[in-house]
Length: 370
Image: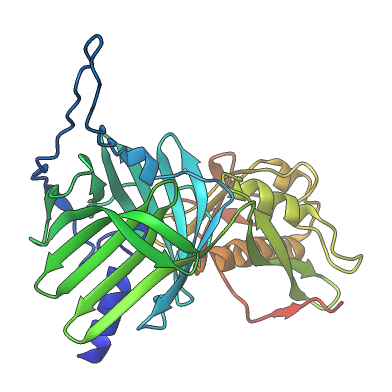
């Protein structure tokens, strides 16, 4: 039971960045109950002392959904080893962001959108260690995280019948990153209660999940600006001298909206040493690269990859195996489908027809010695 609650608390503590606070559930019914807060203004008259009631600030939801490229948010956790995490925006476009959420145990990709007065999680994918633009993706677990009017009492119901309510709009919250005035959002379910706090121009600053005597919290620790995502990627190459596939680990840096295939293509063209063969020639281009629903990597290269190869049957096989190992390893996939300009791969030695793939194989590999 303790293990269940601990893991359950992880999901709950990541409400804004991770999606659903209870069971990755959707918002299917949006019952909005605004408070009775009103603004009263007294119109001044000539030669009369004027008094007026201050106008209540109208909170705008876009202020609580800042899109800050090249910025990393770091959260400090308590109550569970996975309550600490950091968030980086891999891609951003037109009120929509794709977050990379790394809690030390796994990496999740989350697509979140601001539209029609709502902040909605549209899509999530676990074990997304690679970079791939998923902004166009949606799943069946869409969930409203915050919605207008940003007033005490605004309430909406989640798919599992949990109830999410704005319970305060001006709460003093202190985190390791500083002190804030925040909107408080409470989610109630039979399994426990989650309270999330959102600060203007920042976003989520704290999340607390409580169930019985157990409590898990995540609090904003720091914001790193002008940050990059650094990935260590293995690139594989044929070594005809010892009939092995050699690999070299390279540190590749990405900024928000950097195109992954371009960065990998450039790195793969770099010369390693005179004993190691080239895989990508000068004119080789990656037309498309992605992980499909069938868990296979699909990579389409231009025809220069083959025309500039100048290899015998064995060497060509080693080159293709190097491609499969490089991109299969990056996407954590065992199978790679290779095509040329959207057509089948076919040379004088090897032909890959419809449904055929190259199996990733690390059995005959060795790291390049420096």
